[in-house]
Length: 214
Image 1: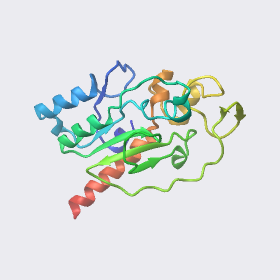
Image 2: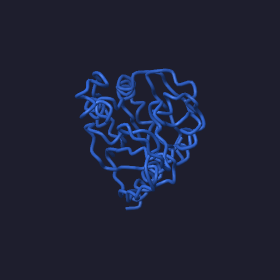
Image 3: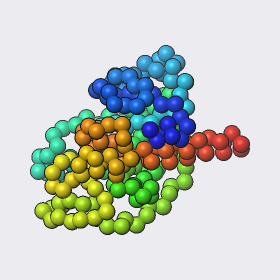
């Protein structure tokens, strides 16, 4: 949605059905679909490729102390294979991940506070074949509401992940992130605010225009 608002025509790809997705979408394995697009030359229809591979292999829920406790299970790390394919396209791209231990460059980090949102939702973005200036990370106004290590704290942000423990309800997540097209908890907990991708989309278009003018 953020890229749409920035002026892009958007096609989506997901391995599971996403009936509430507001744009054309192909149900497929993303790596296999990208391989096919490269082989047929169809990939050249696109100006930018945004990727949000499964994050469980490097996020806070499955590393560090949580990993030592046996939480989270085993998860494949798809980013190296994905990056190889993205480089083969010759196109600019974005790889998005939570701010954990995923093997991505921290070219850009965005926070909900930058956009006046009700979530922090820190996300790291690797930018391939293009770059932009990193925005300042604003000071947070307080805590994320909910329990952490057995202690409850109130605050101006809601926890848009999991359930219980003071975490956000579905309407709260929708409002906090600015997402109206789905009310499925699992989709909301994995989503990023469209304000993030709208910012990235506009930054990419500005960077491309600067190259053309140069």
